[in-house]
Image (cartoon, rainbow, N blue to C red; front, side, top):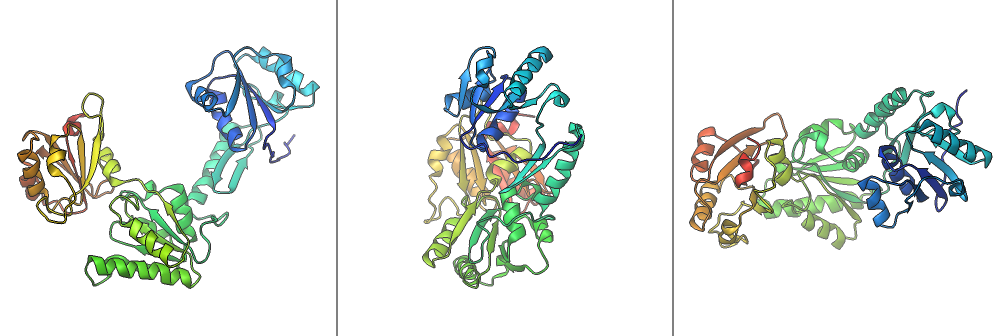
Length: 400
């Protein structure tokens, strides 16, 4: 017997979930995503389910199942571990001609839940003939192809002609690009990159995609940004979908705001896909938690591209020196000697642990650990080069 595959439109329809454990915790989010009216019956529920109840997304009846619970239900999910109780519930549902999913015995159920992967508006559901492991294996294989762009199931709505998307590529490892970012990249007609974008992602582009390398613009920083803005607007006006692929997150010292404003001023629709910021991800990849209980209740992300004494610097280094939390400094390698000196001058202890991580999350990752008083010399001796993230604070030694 093969099941008949069907997509249920549950918007506003009641779905009864009996049980409040791990299985119910997995099932409820998808039901809520389908806009179902979820009623949960169980004496006890998990904290995750309690959060849905507290937010008003789920109705909880804090007791054992009663036959009247099936009233007005279009679908029943039985997520209890007692086979006798599950059988009773499914028999009552069958008597009322209500489809019932059973977590304990799918062969005794009248409906099965498939293994599912979602990519934007596309949902792939796999039924493996009663073998959950087979369903998951096939689902995962298809999901990987969709994520990599090998299967283009649907063009994302924001990937329309004449639009621009600012996409954060993350800290360097191409696998840290978000799913949404990868889908948009696969749909791009033009990709504008710089030296911090995850380079391996470019190997996945279609052959006909125009690649504009902003790092090769032969101008100063301001003129280069003007040229990037011009290219984004020009290609979008030609009716192309343009992805501006940026390192880390578009808005964390990435000048994404300037690019968005340029598009808006030109009447070009633009969307933003957040990226994993290197200010947090790179320390994590080096075994350093940006916060840690008992050591840091705060962290501050700082740009170090201007020296502390530079008249255009907006950073209050004296105030940062007085903080007890973690400093994550981007673009500060060149100015590290001055930064270390000013932090000590205004109160940071000379023996404060410091780590400098070069090319974090990539194969070229290198880590130098030192103290605030010695870090500049240690980095010079190790010949570290940008891009690098500097982490200052006791969290540097938290896991060592």
